[in-house]
Length: 325
Length: 168
Image (cartoon, rainbow over all chains, first blue to last red; front, top):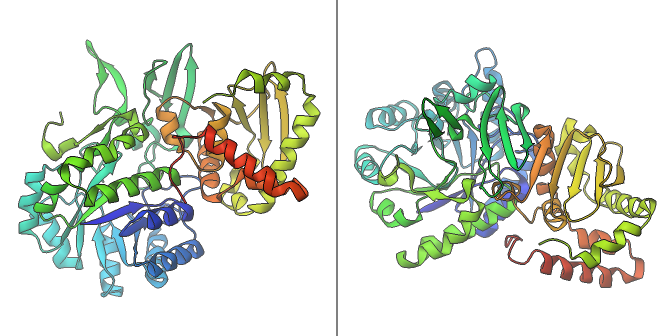
């Protein structure tokens, strides 16, 4: 299985390549990609240089253009696709059907991957994208069990890529409106989930309070590991209960399921984290690369250290083994 | 890791102007060597960033656009747009991109307040810049450069033992 690794900056890109990535995915410095954060992402010259660096080492570059086009501003997305193709991207990761149609028509030889943001999770949806736009690979949403994935791979005519490590989203990828509800901006349309412009942290005695827009997301006690200030990871009072309403601040880790995913027909494992620093990228990529070639019994120990770098300092296998609540 | 008290004590008595001069010299040297840092910071180069090392009785107020560093005692807290607090070693580790900011935030070793967009832009700009502080400090030492840089690298290695990733 290929290891698909994140890069938010050229430095992180080189780290991912040097640490053993089979492919690195990244995006332009604008709202065409779902990690549109300040100071992050690539200018055109930076992408060109990075693609060259990867290509010389036999590593592929995937360019994520995985937000949905805004009516009237389609030119921004079309231009991004034109530039990514011209710069030599090995694949474009797309979510918007209109953009898929544009790429399929204008660049029929360009490899097209279906982003997780397209939320294609069943045979009919995926086959439609394969037949209509020539999609070569689908990145599955993190809502399926390993058994679901195994059934699906047998029914579709494209490769399957699944998330193996990193941040988790709620079970509505590409359709989540929680960030829009709180801030007016979303990863789907603006490339930002819980934008930093709306995030505040403040101290209340020994407690750290995180706020998003007008909402208090969480209050972390002095020795409590913290998480991202997103509504989906918020701790709320609902009726008589007090706790995480959607999901806990915890990260995905399916290293224990590598064999099962391989047998299920998965072609590639994806690491989430374009917003993370190069130290994280280097550590996670090299650990997972070693885990992929290690004996199953050795894998957990190889990635144990990564837990301390994860959100909430805890990991879960999420929906993959159905114990997820 | 926090600084041992024996190292911190002299800072209480050192004149501020001297510390500020040293900090400005290093800051200017870093900016000269990494002009790309400005480009990635974009509009946030005007931001007043406050660095508060928890184990040092000083605060550092940095404004990238004007290339200024103001040093103040902990008893005064200057007005800033964005502030980051943590042990000095980890703040320097972040400056060089040797530590992952999110991981330190999750573990509560770092705390951030103020303008989070500006803080994120700075984090990402620094992370991409491949700053080598021992090299920068060494470059200011004239003929003693290799010696000073080597000593600084040794201190860094010991201070960040087990904390920094095996990046290249």
